[in-house]
Each structure stands twice: as C-alpha cells, then as structure tokens.
Length: 387
Image (cartoon, rainbow, N blue to C red; front, top):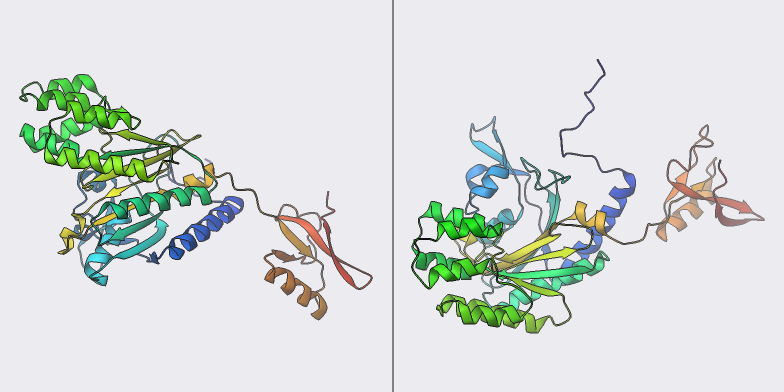
C-alpha cells in the first residue's frame, strides 16, 4: 500500500513559491493602500469561543465553522470561517471609540465545506471595514476602495452588482411570515427559483404577494430602479433603499454597475446596501461587501458599519499582474567585495542567491534566471548559463 501520509484533506492545498510570492506581493500592496486611506491593520485570533465567534452571524456561518473543545476550559471553540465578525468585535468591545474607525485585516479562514466547485476550504481573507458613520458616504468610500483594490490587482470588474436588503425585509414584514417561511423564501429568491417563490407566497395578501414575486425579476441597469419604484409598494423602507441605490449610481458613473433586489447574500447580518464584484474568469463573485449596522449589538454596541472582503488566493489566480524577475545567482566563494555587491543589489529590490558549492546545474530550478559575474573589476548581471 502506497504511503499516503503526505496527502492533504480535500479542498486544502499548499501554496508553492511562485504563487506564494505573488500572493504576498499583492497582500502588501493592498494593505499598504488600505493604510494610506486611513485603515488601521488588526490581526484577530485564528480561533475563539463559539458564542463570541458566531454572535449575530446567523445559521449559515455556524454551519461553515469547524468546532473543537478547548482542553484548558472545556468550552466549545471555533476556527474562524469569516474575519468580519471578529473585526466588529474589536471595534465594539476593545477599541470602543466614539467616532469613525477604519480597520483592515488579512488572514486565513477555514470552511467545513467548499463554497463551490474547485474552491479552497482555506481562503486567505483580506478586507476593510468602516465603523461609526451611518450615512451613505461610508458606503461610497468602501465601494471606491474596492474599485481601487481591484485596480491594484490589475483586475477589471465586468460587473458590480448592488442590492439593498431593506427591500426584502420590508416586504417580509408586511407579509407576516413565520421565521421558517421567511428563510425558505429567502433561499428561493437567492436561487431565482420562481416556482418555489410563487408557492411560498400564495397566501400573502396583495400587493405584497405580487411585489415578492417581482423581486426575482428586478435586476438590471439603473432603469430597473425606476421600474421597481412603480411596481413595489410605497413603503418608507423601500423608498429609502431605492433612493440610496440611485445615489450610488450617481457616485460611480465610471463603474459597470448592475442592480439586483433579490441578491440577498449576507442577509442575516446585512442591514442596508450590499454589493458583489464579478470579473471574467470567475463565475462567482470575487469580492462581497455591504452594510451591517446591527452586528456590534452582540457585544453591547451596535455601531454603523460597512465594508468588503475578498479571497486573496482567488484574486491572485485572476490577477493580470506581471511575473517578477527571478533571482540573481552570486558566485562562490563569498568575500567582502562580493558581499557588498550582493547587499547593494538586495537594497535595490533584487533577490540574490549565493551559489553554494556542489549544486551546479540546479540553480534555475531554484528560481535563478540571472547570474552575477565579475569582469575587469566590474560586477555585471548576465543571463544564467545553465542547461
């Protein structure tokens, strides 16, 4: 029987040197951009007690979370499946600031099941969150920051879909649905399953019944918002939501905006505008975000909040950023003159590898594509001559 001890669990994988280097370069570039916009970097723990980790997040995150027993306390702990709730806890409970707080983060999360075909169960989640401002200005800021983020990754968004959970919430409230029925309806709308939606709202009174049936068709460009205003009940929450979406359309004339009133991802903790970015090469959204004002209530402080996150592994796969140079191979033996030249090159951003003796013919495999040679008391960089 073959030795299988080295095999990794399904949908868990190593990141090898070339991809790891690209991913780390992206991570630094994006976090530096966030910091330049005033976002402060935080590093939440990999695991927490379950009641804290899942507070306010709904059943969907609970099902995605690996759980274990803490050998010190005997309490149930979870490996984080989403960093956003942890950052909300930091804002509400640890920083406890009065004004606006901007936080950013990057770290691995773990999912019990992959989110889709050929998707890792260990995304590298990177994101930015803005707390303390209830106005739409905060949503505009984070959407603009998302656009900047994709630009830094050299990814062109083919579509940025905007929605607003207040529309569905207002209609569900008017329909007086039970929690179970509301959850079923939410799932059917999310899947654009019109026959199931029709069956679930058969006993709902008009005009709410027709409005709920119409939600799955209410997607498209800005003109859809005017159509929605004509056919949906003139409830205050719906009127405000549509006005917010129009204002966002005005703020981003350069972006490929779409609008979808049945896109309810994150419904259990989102409280307003929600958005998803798509690009060529990925059938799923490459970034998700939105407003989640009530989330901090679980820690005793419900702060206005909005933000976005993405999987750096997937972004790295889709990024069109060019490959960096390989390393420069420096000759052996090392002396003071060679050491000074190596350090000069490293200070200029080059990778320099010392050619330890006895490994001729293997340096290109180690990532070297150039070599450092000394000719007439001058150091020159030439293509690596290696078969």
